[in-house]
Amino acid sequence: MTDSKIRQEGARAPAASSALVSGPGAGAALLVVLLGSFLDLLDATIVTVAAPAMARDLGADDAQIQWMIAAYVLALGAGLVTGGRLGDRYGRKRLFMIGLGGFTLTSALCALAAGPGTLIGMRAAQGLAAGVMVPQVFGIIRASFAPGERAKAFGAYGAVQGLASVAGPLLGGLLVEADLFGLGWRTIFWINVPVSVLALVTGAKVLPESRSASTARLDLLGALLAASGILLLLLPIIQTGAWGWTAASHALLAAGIVVLVLFLVHERRLTGRGGEPVLDPALLRVRAFVTGLSASVLFFGGLGPFFLTLSVYLQVGTGRTAWETGLVILPYAFGSIITSGLGVVLAAEAGRALLIAGSLTVAASQVVLWAVVRGGDDPGYWQLAPTLLIGGLGLGLAAPVLVNVVLAGVPARNAGAAGGVLSTVNQIGGALGIAVLGTVFFTAVSGSATGTPGRADHGHALGIVLAVSAVLYVVTALVMLALPRTAAGDADR
Image (cartoon, rainbow, N blue to C red; front, top):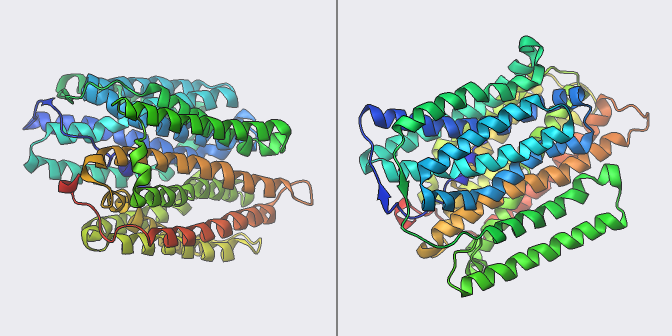
């Protein structure tokens, strides 16, 4: 639940032009950017708890449930690197305000969606808006605060991320159950609007402007090719239940591979002309970076589908309410908060060990949870909560330091670009995980011998996901053995 912090670790070089803030204005400016960051992570977690209610109300099928989450994550990942460079070039305040304004509008449109297709489209648009807004948060803090105040600002930033991870499942469950004004799940999007408007009005007055001296052209074609290739790969996987594996499905997979090859060819040519690509091909020759990409895809690929399938199991399989589901998931957030600070402190001395320990701890928690749900009985709160707490402890050890450990093996001149690409890959890994493991779950549920899936069917399906995910986290730990032993310091970046 701390992956929003990871997205922003690929900070670029300090701004060529900036205005430092101090006094009351500094507090107000920090509050504005923290609100934007809070809304992004809150929206990613709150929808998972509300997904079953959204599906019931809109008549969404299994694939559409996956797209409601994956569309946001994929669009966010597609926009991060380009969004950061837009801020560097045209002004971080300007792009933050544009992204926040877009996030406000698309939140309202999500709340007004009349069908699953419309909601999925608006979720993608919301993710793109967040992809413009989120990279500016880290850049504004680094460029606009004096060194003595910067550490305090980042400390407040980390606290807000922890708060969002706790608030997401609780607020999602509370709003769905409260059914304010008969709006049900729609309130999870409406709540963004007044908070975002307040941030927009305040930000226009207090945020300082900053930008980079770089005048390199944006690699829009590269960003489009990368996003299109990933989408073509995800589409037939998520739609397996509806389409089956037809000739068209195989054609889409082949097309996705071709587009990604074209992406790499384009990036090489752009680099040869002295441009700034989305992905510098030279990074693919750095062992630590390639290993880090693999570890990130595996690690973050397990988180999204875990929370989605657990939420569906708890609400549809065991009959819990959205509020009760939020309470069950809450210990995972608390566990992450408990160990995340420890991970950051120890990263400079034992970064790789923390990553391996965190991955194996997550794997162990999923094995225990598999044993709890596989029998078909309805597990009680105290059977679920301790296991989820353990999983959160593992997440907190690994997630906050993964990018910095990978960057320790990357030449300093490439650290900014590598961090941005890794941040994007985290999101792509989440989308891939939702596509693959989400499809495994829903396929297993729909294969019920009775024709009407019940608690045992949902428990069996969740058990399959947990078993596969546990194996993947063990593999992730083995991959992490090839990463640098310690994390890169801020000075190294």
